[in-house]
Amino acid sequence: MENIIKAERLKKNYSSFNAVNGISFAVKKGEIFGLLGPNGAGKTTTIRMLTGILKPTEGEVHIGKYNIQKESMEARQIMGIVPEMADAYIDLSAIRNLLLTGELYGIEKEKSIKKAENLLKMFHLYEKRNQKVKTFSKGMKQRLILAMALMNDADILFLDEPTSGLDVESVRLIRDLIRKFNQEGVTIFLTTHNIKEADLLCDRVAIMNYGKIMAIDRPEMLKSVIKKTSSVEVAFKNLVEEKVFNFKEIIEVKKMGDKFQLYGNKMEDIILFLINHSQKTNNEIISLKILEPSLEDIFVKLTQKNENF
Image: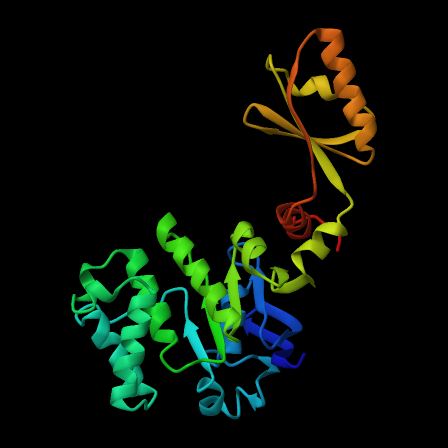
């Protein structure tokens, strides 16, 4: 499958601060690619360089067959962009915002009206089409901004934290629409610090911290290489203290509400230890299950400050 986004040796320096420090990666046509990392990792700076908003200190970006620095107008014709801090014109109606976007892309008026109406229906905003955007909730505004980015039939959609701070209904709708557009052939590049979102949506994930990319792979492949291959989640009828789990095969214990998550290498030995403890103390096990490593485990491991990579 051909690459539709290619970043080579990208750097962005601000005085003595390296926001992005020499990263290279490629995104295949038709995939959902996630850039995952904590706040301040360099995700927004990266997406701004990919979309031509920021000029890199070093390196190159190709969008399709275009070099974003040398052919920015051509590159922008095939992309839709939803920046993290984007906003619509609040004193205009929803449909007027979309039609104005259509004018900026040079779309013929009748086609623009039809496209705008279809998008408003898709984003559950059609009944509010003539209302001014300043009356909209944050979730409605975000849906409208995403619709605006799709007015030009983009081949690539860049989304910077698309569901951050939104209500549950808007988050669910936006995720469903991201999948729908991707199934129709749109390549999606999204940044997020939401591990669940990356796991649910992305074909591949790049984990970023301190301006560097720590790993790139499919979420399931990343999970499979972590040293802590799995864990046991257990809950007893009578609450127990963490010190109960002093057993050589248990290398880490996490309290999760009224349950404990136990990490180790030999799950069968840990389970046997738990059963023996239950019998000796007459404390019934009410929940016991083996958990595969999560993307969160990978994320925490790769973004710890003192980790040796």
